[in-house]
Length: 223
Length: 223
Image (tube, rainbow over all chains, first blue to last red; front, side, top):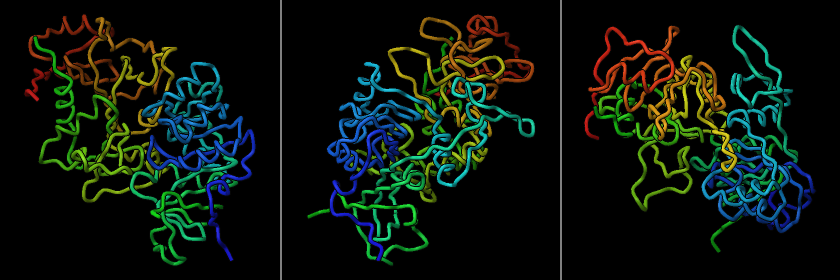
């Protein structure tokens, strides 16, 4: 029997090792797995490389991990989201390495890892500082830069609804990076608002098939 | 001579958007363009976080926490709108499916090079977001900006002083003084605010300007 549900946030984040590359879904404060990342803070993993669109917002989730010195490096497109004080303090203190990646390149590098590809040639960044040191190549008269896959040890995601097989449905613009990150890590952990019975999700409308998901934990259910 | 206000620059840019276009609006000045689309045109706004058919900001109290725009502000969805994940949002941009990208800029060169992602201010950590994807990928890039900096330095340059977002991507420039096209022969003035002479406009612009034979006065309503 397949049952990917776990009973607690602690179980959901168990086994994340020091030095792990963690994919943190979300765009600004929307669609991010704050409760899972808070649990990771409690779990104690450190020296983390965090991949996220923004480098934390407010005082929870990725921002809390950064504020507590657990993150060595952030790979992101736009570190300063709303309320970026945790990132700014760590960055200015020289305690946080920053790798900037154009937003679409960031998501496509993860898709590449998920798809088992060795990289892709993109026109984005050609002729700019962010392509320095990378192979460029002319294809049919246009210049492209080689971008390599980006794989996570663990992905932390957030969905609206899941069944015990790990099929996921997201809500509105909270979908954002969740589907690609769920596909691009060795271990994918998802916090959801609601569980559905197996067969209770419309198979035509499942956004992430359960094959990509390893653990699901319910968060914020009404008692 | 009365330079256009920021809202008037946005109004002017809005008049050029063709009915049926798929358009991405950058953060800041370009966002204002949505307020001035002529009523007889149906325009679909694309948001990098996975939304097509973005509507106006919701009334206070009606914001949905899962629905935001690229600037992380509360948003709404028009009938016919859709949600999708980040890779598809950037596939639309990079693959030339988005007809028009309107962006802000620090500087534009006479060749249409765009600089709008970092000023290398050490006190202000850089972020690129989706700017490079849009500049390299959208079918057409137009920029909106003040003609000069606060201390009167030209923003239209022989070459950009700030790091490039993409080379040779800008086709049209809307400023508080003029509408200017980037052509293979250089910058071509299409419209000038009434009371501005070509000599005065040239004074505020680094590369040489040519006045189009069919140039027109640039008038905008009080908006």
